[in-house]
Every structure is written in structure tokens, then in C-alpha cells.
Image (cartoon, rainbow, N blue to C red; front, side, top):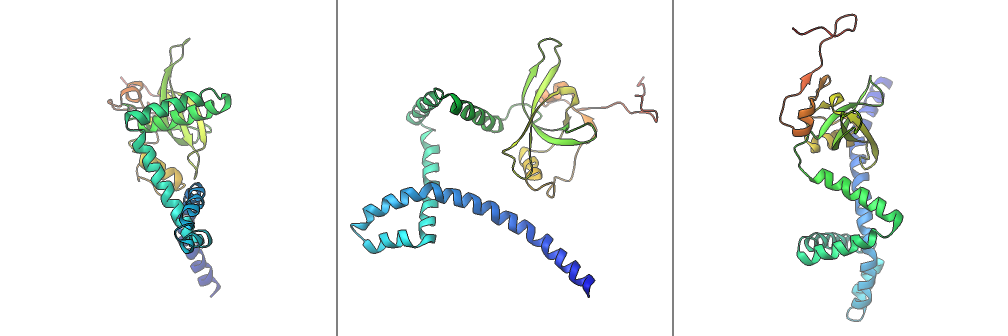
Length: 242
């Protein structure tokens, strides 16, 4: 009897955890959208009060109605912002705003870094975007995204800047500079990799390259096939390929 109780209890916990995580994530984003829009709703009630005092009272005293209106206003504002920045006048206003932000010492660093990170995920360059790197040590690997490539000015070694997100919050992570020859390229899309990271590995593409190291040309152009590491003998030395 106790065995069945423990088994069904564990099954219930495993079943409800994804539901709770989903509810938590959506509740967090909806709460943020509501908090952004509530000042607009409160300001609108002042205008509505003259024509319909009952409606104004409802907007202030009914929590779910106030939150719903706040969320709708915030989504509409984000949509209008996206539309505005797509036209000439909107782009000019955005340029003026960015010029103002650049004059604020600390804010310009945060804004500039965040903008560059977002733009790096929006671009579709000919790079092998999703890779595995040896992190935090050689016996373990982590999923990362190639965000930039560079060259060591002294040795000429080609390097890649790899962003390694944390689980389950991918907005924080580590930035590692790795030689291109040490990257292991994955045929995952960015969406597949992000889903894998956010889910803590519970949702995966079902395929992975563990010991296939990307060539420098593949990371730079994404067109050539990755080269495998030379096989090792029982003593750990690489065998010759004649």
C-alpha cells in the first residue's frame, strides 16, 4: 500500500511540475505587462469618470478588469512601438533617443550591450550558431551560441565568442572566448537549443554531436562539413591516418 502511494505521489509530482513552471512563467510575464499598463488605465479612468462614473469605478475596483485592460494597453503600445520604428519618422526618433542614452555613462553600457546581444540573435549570418564547448572543464560540455568571430593579433589563432545561457533563465549566462578548432558544431536550430536550455534538458532534439569538432571554415561560413577528431588508441595517443 505504501509503495503504491509513493509511486502515484511521485507520478503526480512529475506531472504537475511542467504545469507549475508554465503557469509561473506566464504569470510573471502577464504581471509585468499589467504593471506597465496600470498607470495608463488609472489615467484613463479620470477621463471616463465624467461620462460614466460606474464604468470608472469598475475599472478601479475590479482587479481582473484593471489587469486585463492594462495588459491590452501594453500589448498595443508594444505593437505601435514596433510599427513606429519601421517607418522613417520612427527610426529618426529612435536614433535621437539612442543618442540621448549614449550620453548617460552607465545606461549606455547596459543598453548597448543588450541591444547588440538581441541583434546578434536576430541576424542570420553564415555562422554555425549553436555549438558545444568544453565548459566548465574538459570532461563536461555546454550548449552555446556563436555571437562573433575574431583573430588573436599575436598568434593569428581564430577565436569565437560563445554565449552560454543558464537554465532555466537564458537571459543570464557566461561569455566564453574559445578557439574555433575546439568548437563542436550542432545541427540544432536556435529555437531547439533555447527550448533545450529553458526546459533543463527535458525537451531535446533527440540528436547531438559529442565528439565532432567544427572546422574553422564551418564556423566561419557554415558550408563545410565538420572534421572528426583523430581516433585515440588505448594509451591515449592519436593514431596516424595514412
